[in-house]
Length: 378
Image (cartoon, rainbow, N blue to C red; front, side, top):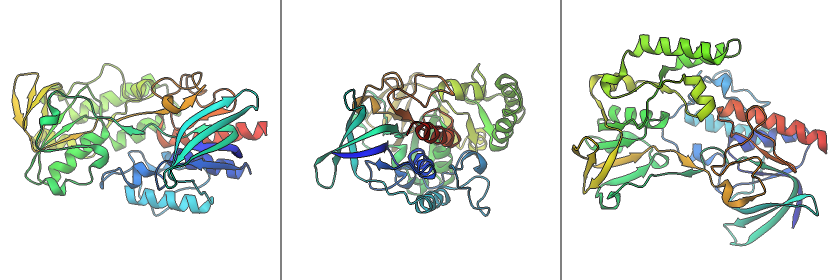
């Protein structure tokens, strides 16, 4: 068994941020990563036109700014380059293809014992450490809901993690299921590439421009959420008008309140609204009854034919399957039980990073808190 001071599980931005902060405090650590690269969600499972949804100053990782030449909203390839540079700068060397099977606190040794399967050798390796950091992120395992008859659909069915570009879908009838930021941007990308695009809005949504969100985040430093939300809704109504005529409801709760309470982000409009308004993107009723061959039956009893279905239905976390004794810190869905800002610290040297539903900005704050806390103990 290999003994460590700290074990970080996951080498996405959250894990890398924690590693950098531990390095700054001269605290030894190892990173266990199930994929064969860092930041796999960005490198392998993201669509081409993806940009950071927030301005770059809200997305920097600790101790290293974005290059001044980077645009305000950083595109995917540039963000990947930044992460690769970050790894080089802090000399971070994750142990790849290690899938953690169990992590349990030993009351006798006062250490966390972690078992991980090495995909290359097939062997289960054992590690122990005084501190364990869960950095597996909010986007762990792609989730596709069960739909009656989906197995009979003759066309292509894919999760957003497998979607790259609308180029291959020109002139095809494509249904996007799910209306988070990935869903509305993938629908836009499909429409831009000449696909006949439809989208299902499964719940009401706040449409905001990037500029509105930037203003809102800046205001939140000085004003209460309720006031900022009031202004955001007012601006949204001014710019986008009444969206119910297109089949999109507006939530009764404010955009930033919902982001904090439910982790539900407002929709950052980068052109989707215009396509919905012009009819290039069709909004369909929220509920699918069943799939019949290439036709999809909706709640209004209308049957629509499609060639492809893209599920932008998010992710589930699997922490509860391998973490034993973390019940105080994480719930069954792998999200923190303690409320912000005390969400990052559990018991017996257990921590979580990047699960506060505050994006990269939140992950950076978590990483710094964790490193400072460990430093005060060792």
